[in-house]
Image (cartoon, rainbow over all chains, first blue to last red; front, side, top):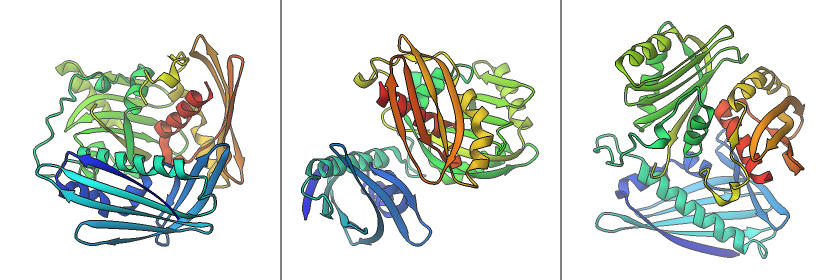
Length: 268
Length: 102
């Protein structure tokens, strides 16, 4: 059995951290080295731990236990067992989380460094997730994301999109039917699910013939692009006139789209 | 993973629009996903750290296989993809391969 641990100081209320830890599938999905997660029959995750030129790949079935201040994720694989214990200590304004990762199984004598990395990165993920997830009725964090270069997305400039994406993560993926002028309904639906002021919504039809991308700040469209086989329409909203055009473009969008939503992470 | 990372010193940006290229491949990826694991296979031409050309095809395989290497100014890649990733997800995979290969 190899054990590795780390401590992270999270600048967020304990409830925030708890919320992340209790949503086991999304928490596990965000771990490093996790290749694939399935929730079909309970939670299983395929984890690939690299060491030198080798990769230790196994599928673990996760069970989850929690009590007052500790959270245990136990994964049973074919060739090994992995478990993570997170203990929270509440301080005045922040939370101290102690993470201990233990692994017993194939390659355990080699994997010390990898496991240390693993647990440290999980710690960082937890910190990132907790600090970025505003509770619904909490005042929005005062981090000024406006005017930052990251939000300066212009869909006719792929590098600006790339720059935004490099500091974002995908939070939702699914097929959606967009009816007449239905993009706004979809956005409303997404807002109920995802608590982030900034949303990057992208959709593409099955045949790839038509696609749209839109960047939103609250209900305001910052930039939009709508691509069909005939034309490409893109607007970056800077003036009132642009805003009108953006809404016009948005209301043209309809059909069945594979929709992905990205939100910025970290101190944008 | 910002563009200023040390690892990416050799990579400065795109001269072709990767999103458009990926969108062209989307239909094949989507249809392929019903039959197997779609992979994008292709070559990236680098000129002074800038991608000047992207050649790409979609093939199907039974299992996920990832491979990339750099030879001269060219990066060869095979990347398993899933339609759930969306265009942006594909781009992020391509971007990672590019940065790893350099």
